[in-house]
Image (cartoon, rainbow, N blue to C red):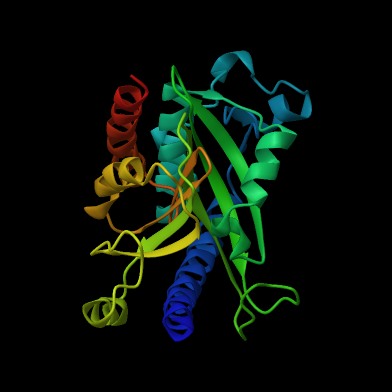
Length: 269
């Protein structure tokens, strides 16, 4: 099983390295174009200001309290990947409430298998869904050969990704799920390698739960999805993608969460 995990990590690192190179090249092009721009952006609200307004401290909080960036500025200032991230941030700012994570929430995140697989991670732009326990946020992850990392490799990469956190009223045990590799599918034909016996996901069980029927019901909603790593930990559900934050993945997660919350409500009743 270790060689399977290693193969997946190597493929992911190669892909991430290519993406980082493309992103850096596009960023330099955009930077060169923007050197002659006579405007700056308010870092808090994304309002576009003249240099004179910025120098005088007129940062325009009232002009754009939500920090929504215009499509014109997105198209002008950002690379293709950054455009999608900016539009995703705009969508969440309109739909959700801004949130500051407290020390208890940070402590929970540091215990997840998802983040413990990386050298380092940072979280920013947390948004709480209105009338829900769900939280969206962006995360920067780093993986490479830094001493002390869980996986020491002769390659370093970092990237921005999207993560979702949902609190439920049921003990889910502690399980980690990721897309199953071709080799993993072959092994499953020979020997059942996990308690849940999922066709499309590798499963790692850290702690079993008495509510296994409930876990089996909700994990079905993930079986049709690819490109996510999922973790059930106590009464928390974590969903993270493997690419930059984007609207398509936000909408995929929203559909899943809608079904999960309905099941959770029926389970409690």
